[in-house]
Amino acid sequence: MTRPQERVGEHAPLCPRLSIDEVRGLVTEYWPDSGLWVEEISPHRVVVTAGAEGLECRPGGTLSGPTIFKAADLSSFLAINAYAGRVLTGVLTHGSVSLLEASEPGPLTVVIEVVRLGRRMAVANGRISDAEGGLVAVTTMQFALPSRQVLSPDP
Image (tube, rainbow, N blue to C red; front, top):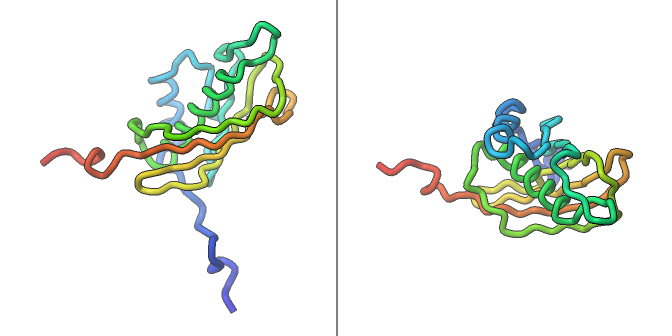
């Protein structure tokens, strides 16, 4: 009989390689006016708040789909960097956002779970909620990571 931790398909928790302050530093350095704030980094999960000041609305008074996609993309990028280390040349290769309900203007909470982190690819799933806690969107973002040749300096 196998012990529970030896079952097929179970993995050890993914530990972050960057601190929360280092990930917040990425936001400050590259997207200072985005309204993003990293709230939490824990095994497999990063929580980001997208402040209302960085979110665009449609004429009808709801948040636009591209704005929600942008919050998911940047939050996923931050999560991948938190767990893979500083991989600023990671490229979004596939992004999927299912918009579930219109969201009134206000902050969004983006919870990102890193579900796959390999040498060349990373996948993150997200849940985006509005200020009242209502689920607004679910996402899947896939990133191509730089090869070892790119990461290591030339001799």
